[in-house]
Image (cartoon, rainbow, N blue to C red; front, side, top):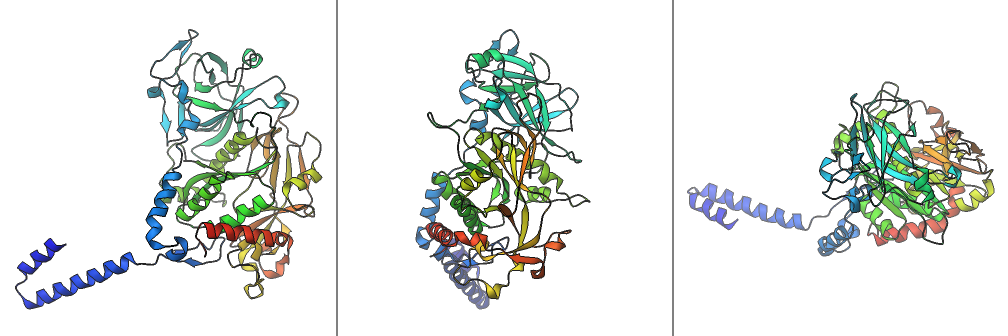
Amino acid sequence: MLFYMGRVLALSCYRFRFILFISLSFSTFIMTILYHKRVHVLKRSTVPVTTYVYTSAVYYAESENRNKYDSETNSKHSYPMYHEDQIPMPLIDLTANKTNNCAYFPKVNHLKFNNIYWQIMSADNGLNVYMYSAYYDNRTILKNNAMVRIIVMISKPLKQIDTYCNLWSENKELKVGKVFSLHKLSPTYPAPLYPYLITCAVPKEWRAANIIPAAVSLVNHKCGSATNLLRVINNIPPKGQEKNGIAVCIKGLDFANKDISVYLVEWLELLFTMGVDKVTMYEYALHPNISRVVRHYQDIGLVELIPLTLPGEAPNVPTLRHRYLDTSDSNHIYVNQILNEKIPFNDCFYRNMNLFEYISVLDYDEIIIPKVAYDWGEMMKKIKYKSRISAYQFWRVVVLNHTDNRSNLDKTIPNYMYILKNIHRSKIYEINPKSIYTTERALVLSTHVAKFCLTERIGYYKCFFKKINPDIAHVLHFRNSCKEGQEAFCGLDKTVKDKEVRKYQQVLVDRVSKVLKNQRFIK
């Protein structure tokens, strides 16, 4: 800076130019000071949180400690690259061993990756299969059978697939077999890719010898060369423990530019207050404040965050991806979002099915509120039915932000408690329910219900549901505005007061306030 000042002074032969230079330099100096002492205003999202502003003095505590604080949290919480979760790293080497005079164990440079977390199998007919994850399934209901479930996106809608499974053991022993079954995860809309569940049967001799597949490849022809290799994940409880409790799955969160961090704390704390043991989230993109909240819950073992991208030629630049997922067709159906969200739903289910007795799929703006019990565990004991039930269905009711008269809000509830503040719900229940699934029975999860389920008869995938009376429990569906076709839910004259959630008020306010103070959102 001094160099340029000297140069300008030397060249300034007119008094006016010299005075102008001094004025500009002084202005720049003052602006630099103000910049370093600036107050960062973090504007809270209006969906679904009321607008608040927080200065850096509140959010980061002391401004001089900001860089140190951020560097510590970033180094401690660098997100894992889930390649190592999806790929059998101990099996991969640069030596391609031919196994059983059939297929080579694929070398790492033979694998075809797509958008970080996907691998590709390309068929002769132009079909592309994008493979995301694979899981070992030996649930009791399968009796002496065991399966490997592969979650994929396919470039064409199919009823069956003529493909082979290469199952690899830990010592690279190979078993080859045709795909056992193919289940679609979603209705068939015009789209570039469609979600499916591919099932490979584990050979009975491996089952008898208690050999669990370590990896799986999909190939076009028997003994064909593989361009993909997924680790077969088998999450089980610690020795001496059985699966128990309840987990919640959330679709890919796409909040690069929207901050719902304060609301997310309230939502998560309400779930944990009601006895939820774990929440599994998937991340497309997160606002820094949301990341801070999620890291806190990762630290204490209540939240698992898994990175996610869109496969194929879909955009993964955050702004373009958001538009891609948020684009609807002529019938106001968000096709891209509906199809892609089935991947995290089902990946989350298989990731947790051996650990928990029940799993629910919720959006961040939904919450199941029991009326005959305090928590979900007590509620499930009261409504538990015959063992063949695949899912318990709860009816949803809309709670709109603008339906509450702000002048009559309970002054004892802090302004940042969105769920507790809004207690006016629609008189009319929505058509589509939300479900709590039994992990022993469900096979394919959709947004609202199970599409396919396991029964005592192999190959028979009928689901049995139990619909829960709203007097026992229901789902509060928080929305900021009334969507087209839902006019019957809008307006104070079409709502009723529902204070059921207020039974958690004291505990919830204390828990949320503690987290917000810990994370320096409030003083």
